[in-house]
Figure 1: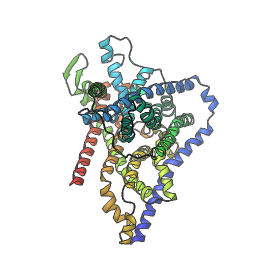
Figure 2: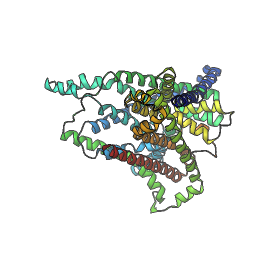
Figure 3: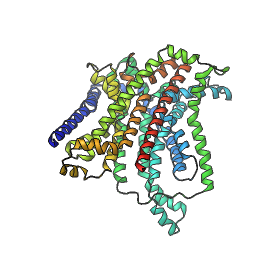
Figure 4: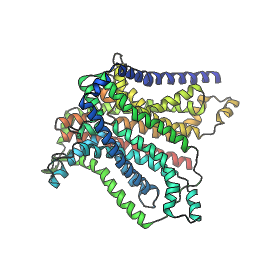
Length: 530
């Protein structure tokens, strides 16, 4: 019986390895083959290409600095003060994570476009298109991710050095330069790389508010979607892969260095009325900025004729439904549910193999599981077009589910990997001595012990699949198109109300999923305490 279970697990492990070969390695190799076929000198001799590359770097650098500074301030306010209502502020600050980058661009058009609310109110002659429009949208899009990463870093800082410094009478500025800055330096570098990569590879914001200010992902999108030029698209894809690879190795280096220390004493926050007051002001302003896009979508959706007639109406929703928005929404929900279910199961087994059954094959699985961090969605989508175009999978819902699993695989995998690593390492040996197989232990011990993590993984896959636009834009057709891709289409048709309604729908569904996951997690915690 034990041998049969062992063979079953070996078969699952082999199947998982084949999955990564077919879903990650081969498509990327196909992309590199197309890259070698391109006339790189001729491509970069075009003024548009060099200009868009410069635009991407400039916008991404500016937006990254602003986003990380704001995120660091918000994370400090949450982790280093004694303010009340932290869970409310935390939830609101994460609202921008629940809508696509296209929606952030859409909200800027509603508020700051040529005929936007604030543009008309201030009497401005032009809208926020071009460089500063992309920067503003990119900051809104990337801020929650940077905030979460920095908050996690600050929450787990060891208080012991600060305690010893206080006993020695070391001044506050010296504590920062000698303790805080060295601790934050490498993780902060990791956050900067990750945020820059997130911004430089996104085309949603730039597509909506860039105007004539083109960035490289927009050029790549237009070349592949509009002209079907896969060779030139592969060149742009490899270029966009460079910062992502740097961010990937930066993440590995930072983690390896961070593992040299451990938390010996939780950080003790001293009450400071001035710090609390400043935190309330900053977090309130930031929360309002996070809420404004959602409010703008709601106002535009339910106002009869904004801004002239603010009477309540449902006609915009009716008109959107007549455009088959609910059909596209159904595609998104089916895609998100399938991605979340299959992705969670795959990541669970992968995390179990790498954390509990170490070996050469498991090291390969771990590398493949974390590699998707270094592959932007827009590059992954293009590689899938090149590799799967002549197969039965192309043009089906299955390929959208597959690309989303690969695109969002690394964070859920790392969640379960670390959870598995915290469980007693001697369980398998004890089970074997008692004649209890690994599959039985998986059902009876590992699944219940990691149930909280599994809910978080499912929620992560679902929310990101609902709002993704990068990879699926290259692979969807009229029958499988997700609803998020309709935002740009309706905006181009001057149907801003329909675009606002779609953004509101995605936000509402994702918020409901996060709330459901939080409720289930709370129930699990209550049972554990009992």
